Amino acid sequence: MFKAIILLLLVLHADDKNVPKLKWVNDGVELTSTITQDTVSRGTTGTGDIDYNSTGVFVSADGKTITQRMDTKTTWENEWGSRLYLLNADGANYDLVFLKNKEVSFDVDMSALPCAINAALYTVEMPKEGSSKGAKYGTGYCDAQGSGSSGCNEMDLWEANSAATQLAVHSCSGGSCDTGGCNVNPYRVDTAFYGVGEKFTVDTSKVFTVVTQFLTDSSGALSEVRRSYIQNGKTFPTPPVTAGGTAYESITDPYCSATGAKSLAGMSASLEKGHVVVISLWASDDAGGMDWLDAGNSGPCKENDPQGARKQLVKAYPDALVKYSNLTVKAL
Ligand SMILES: *[C@@H]1O[C@H](CO)[C@@H](O)[C@H](O)[C@H]1NC(C)=O
Ligand SMILES: *[C@@H]1O[C@H](CO)[C@@H](O)[C@H](O)[C@H]1NC(C)=O
Image (cartoon, rainbow, N blue to C red; front, side, top):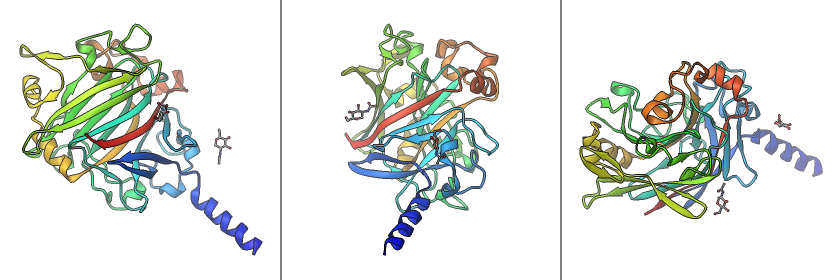
């Protein structure tokens, strides 16, 4: 009897293998999703085979905070960052989010993330069952940088480090995707809006909340993507951007058109199908690879900085990490 119980406990323990599970809320339902890692960053091993301790991915004891480190100790080819998905409790499918008429919020700690590293929390229209080996193996990834049939709609809720941030809708239509996206980076209109220290409106040395709302028009089409930040109980809308003589407070079709981006129509249709959540921490192999996010007009970081290449970053900032908490998708 006791032997059986001990055996059972051992089996349960072995089955668990330290695989992190994240608690989050999807459309009012509290979910506990297994974190799975994509094939690119972990070779062919299944989720059950991953030594998560070496991947730099940790979930807090209450299940609500995920930490992702840049410097990892994996034996796979990449010893940096990771790209993660949320696997449904069924073990076979990714969880899907349906963002129309919803608000997505999360608390984020960017304080340990320097220039040239990109912490990205976004959604893509990838198949919920993954491809070939299945979602459990982190397969099926696609995004708006792909072309033809390999391109897919990508909604970048969060791409940021402690110095700069961008919100972007990458719509696809007629076999091509908007690689630049219809985007907003507050630095371009207010250099004191986002950054490290109390002089910034949003002080990235401390935790803050990122809120993104997906509004629709009377026909149910996506008409607006609206961003605000909450810190110390105060809400800060993203500063208005003037394009073609008009000030825009959010991403709308007129804004996309004024900035030369694709309309929201492709994203509107895509969101109907459901998107998979992606949590990715990465840096470019090359100097200047993250300048679009945080240098020149986009941020205060040094342009084309040789120290901004991945290998240098991992050496110079072995403790670089991002923490996301309280991920919530709820009805507007
Ligand atoms: C995971 O890493 C922590 C901290 O480095 C260590 O204390 C712990 O023993 C490791 N656990 C496993 C199962 O390797
Ligand atoms: C997550 O939400 C809880 C409950 O609202 C709050 O107490 C906690 O501070 C939040 N976590 C972070 C990191 O903001």
